[in-house]
Image (cartoon, rainbow, N blue to C red; front, side, top):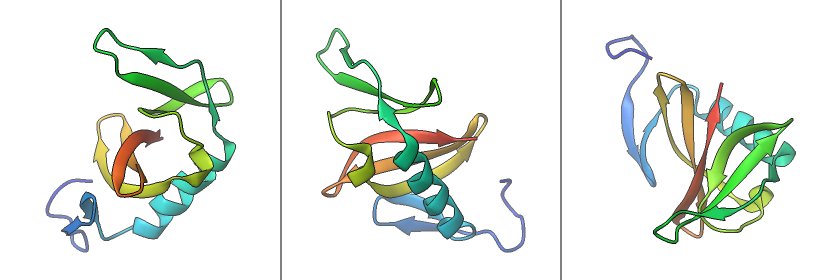
Length: 102
């Protein structure tokens, strides 16, 4: 969403910046996506960082950096970008991955 739109304001949240408008809708969409998500084939990059793709209906919708159950994750900060809304996934106060909402 563009800056300066009436009714929109940015707020520093527990896990970073979030938008006040639509917060519950984003949370609900993310939880729904995580319920449908399955883990794809995990791989490690040359620096040893684990990447676990999150797959819904044969499409990668995000990834985790730890081998965790997607259904047990919390929704963190989110922001709007060129390719949709990017939402952080949080476990025990740490960001462990992200998903993109279309």
